[in-house]
Amino acid sequence: MMNPWLAVTPISILLVLFLLLASVKILREYERAVVFTLGRFDRVKGPGLVLLIPLIQQMVRVDLRIQVVEIPSQDVISRDNVSMKVDAVLYYNVVNPEHAIIQVESYRPATNMLAQTTLRAVLGQHDLDEMLSERKKLSEDVQSILDAQTELWGIKVTNVEIRTVELTDNMVRAIAKQAEAERDRRAKVIHAQAEFQASQTLVDAATILSSIPAAMQLRYLQTLTDIGAEQNSTVVFPMPIDIMKPFLTLLEAAADQGSGGHAAGANGRAPAVAADHEAGA
Image (tube, rainbow, N blue to C red):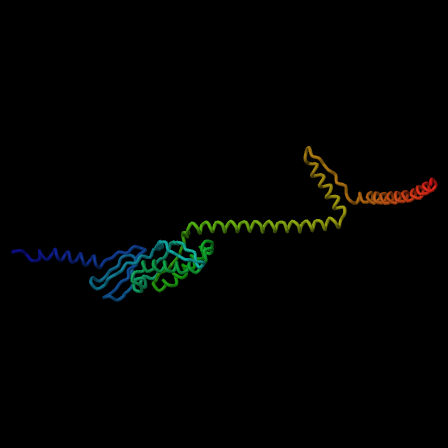
């Protein structure tokens, strides 16, 4: 007759192995175990060796590493009614395993969906120019909103990066025209400011030179020196008006005297001609 212990022994061994596997868990350094006893939360254990009571305690593994989530392209309409597609990258990690398992059904898809809706809501409140020029500030706004809403889930949003803002071809051409017009405006303003500063400097220089006559002569000699430094150059010596003024006065006086004598001579000849005519008669 066969010994019954021989038949029970393999079953016992399998049962012991099953209980051992169900009660002994090993967690890595970045993992934590949320332990439930008869369905009620007990504690958070780990990392390392974790012992559970079979059929009474259960555990859920939680990864504490930073998770990288790619937010798919979202259709966004800006405040100035410009349609575009925007995508981003979300970085977050679990800081409270208990809340991450108990407060939300599945924190990964919940965080992803919340990031999509928040991205559309925040960008829809800004103009296109702000989206293109202040992308860092918009990313910080999205991060702060997500961090505040996911705090109850035991999740910390560390960073949000807006990657690309895709526009239609018509909008790209319009933005290029606007940028070109803005550059032309800045160039004209800078040129006008330069002209104003140059004219102001010339006025100040003229005021200083007019107050000291010797300064004008020194400036005149300096100009001649600069001209003479060039080879095969023709130097034209301008005559100052102050030197020419006495000669111009003498010429004007001589011209006045000549015109007066000519008029007197003409009046003197007229009676003589008349007298000769009477004598002949």
